[in-house]
Length: 273
Image 1 (tube, rainbow, N blue to C red):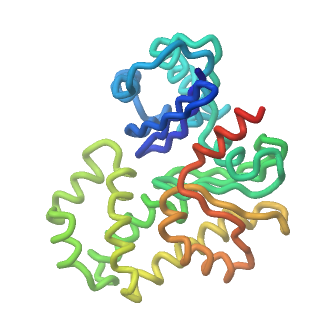
Image 2: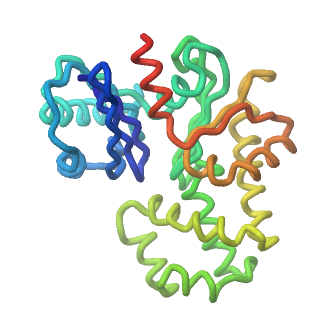
């Protein structure tokens, strides 16, 4: 059996493939940079029992050549859980590239809780513009959309304060505490994405979303070679697809494909390989 997993910071999709049958399981996300070994272990414990595993291929947020300690931390926990002879720990960005383009060339992008992008070719990343996370970057991500929503509401640029507080069931003080005093503020802010989608008819909300997607193009896509196809994975890209295409068209880009999860594309990539 081989296991293929695609993990963002919020959720992880696991595919168990025994050569004929594929079983899909979803757990909380794993971010190797942010999560402790204990937290990773808790997520792995939620997976069902399985037979002997020959290989694990995981594409996870927080994994990259720049963070070898985080990669090794996740690899150790996977080895302890599955005992597989081969464990491949790679970035969620490479997973997006392989799922979207296989071995072809293009610009692969992630818009989920976080955001990232790369120029890819032959199943590898050629160049990556640094994402920088939701504090310094992550333009267009769920975390940044949530941050901009909260900013707009409490600075009175978005006239939905009453509706927002009723929908989230929290006070201003509780929201500030969750952002500044509790872990995983990026997940918390991204949890406001459904509210944004439900109020996309509000002109101020619509402009905010378009502006954030425009920022993604300006700050990221503009640094890659022109003329390459651009495709996306992630929940934000999938659920805001119409506005994403509109914003990128305004910036001179045509979106080739949008998929919510790269898991099936990764199964095709590895099984075909």
